[in-house]
Each structure stands twice: as structure tokens, then as C-alpha cells.
Image 1: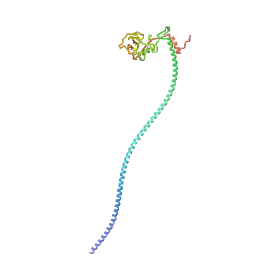
Image 2: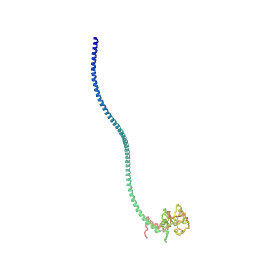
Image 3: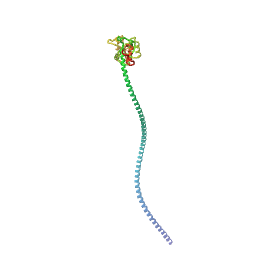
Length: 316
């Protein structure tokens, strides 16, 4: 029994020891639990703070993300604007280069124009000098012309005093000669003027009268005159016209028995005779007697003296 009791006591002592150890361990565990609970409380506080900070940080992060998105958008806009600016800059550089090239071309043209202007000025000065020389020569020529014209007018008196158109006035002709005015044609003892202008019948007749002539009379035997008219291949006013008695008369009042279809008052030649309205414009032919001069010698002597190509004869 004692052994059992001793054993029991030993076991009890061991149990007490274990209990004490357990109590110590419990105390340690309580301390640890208390520390754990304090740590848990602190952890909860820290967690709450972290959660609060996390929410704030999340909001900040969202704002930062939004700001980032806006920044990225602004960056894209800026990049696009930069690309546009680069394009504008490139275009501006190209335009500037083109403008510089044009300016250089303009400067070159201006230099050439200045050179041409200088040459033109020099040429103009030379032309002005030449013009002055020409004006001096013209004045000299005008003076010479006036002198020659005066001499020619004086020389014309030689013809008027020695020559007459178809009349001799009863004067004696010594070595006489005949003539037609300049621009006229001669057939036998008649002079003919073929106009280059065109006029109606009345104005054509008046022109002949101013030339001391009449519109032409064409006889059947005037072969040369008819040939000239035919060669010209055009129609001319002639002297034949219808009078108040419906008779066709020449300027010398001789009557020509002829009948025309339309019975117009005026007649043309081409070379065949044909009637025509008097108002139309045609060339015309004037006729007058040939001119006669008294003496070749006296006429030439007079002309030579007036033109100062020969010396005047001394007065007897």
C-alpha cells in the first residue's frame, strides 16, 4: 500500500509539477494571447487604416489613371499637332525655298532688264542723235525742196507760155512737138486718162471737167482704146448718156442709135457698151485733145534757165 501510496504521491507530485508547468505555460499563453489580441487590435487598427489608405490610394490611383488618360489624350493631340506643325513647317520651308528661287529669278530678270534698259538707253541716245541729224538733213532737204519747187513752178510757165492744149492761137510753130499730161495715154491726136478711183457717173464727169476734158467718146474705129479697156477687165464710165428726148448722145452732141434692155440713162464700156444705173461707182475715162508746144528749143531753153541747169541768154 505504501508503495502504491508513494507511487500515487509521486504521480500526484508529477501532476502538480505538470499543473504548475501548465499554469506557467497557460500564463505564458495568456500573456501571448494578450499580446496577440493587442497585436490583433493593432492589426485591425492598422488594417482599418490601411483599408482607409487603400481607398484613398485607390481614389488617387483612379484620379491618376484619369489624369494619365487625359495626359495620353493630350499627348496624342500634341503629337497630331506636332505632325501638322511638321507638315506646315515642311510646306513653309518648301514655299520659302520656292519664293527664294522666284526671288532669285526675279533678281536675275531685273538685272537683265537693267542691262537691257541700259542698252536701250544707249540706243535711244544714239537714236536721238541720229534723229537730230535726220532733222537737220530734213531741214536742208526741205529748204532744197522749197527751192526746187519754186524753180519748178517758174519752169511750168515755160510750158504755159510755149504750149497749148490743142490750140495754136495763130502762132508760128518752129520745130513743134506734141504732148499728153503726165499719167495720160496718147492715141494719135487725143489724150486719155484711165482713173484708178471709183465714182458715180456725175462725179466722174465733174472730175474730167476739172482736168479740162470730157468723158471719153468711143468710135467703132478706136481699136487701140477698145483694146486697152478689154485688157483692164473692168467697166468704165464713158461720155454716152441719155438726154431729155431719150436719145443717147456723146459729149460732142453726136447721137448714137442704140437700144438697151433696161433703158437706163447712163452707159458704161467693158469694152462693149452696156447700160447701167448712174448711181453705182465705177472707174472712168477722160478724153481731151493732145497738147502742142511752139518750139522744142525755146521750151527747153526756158526750162533749163528756170531750173538753173543752163545759163541765161544775155538780153539782146
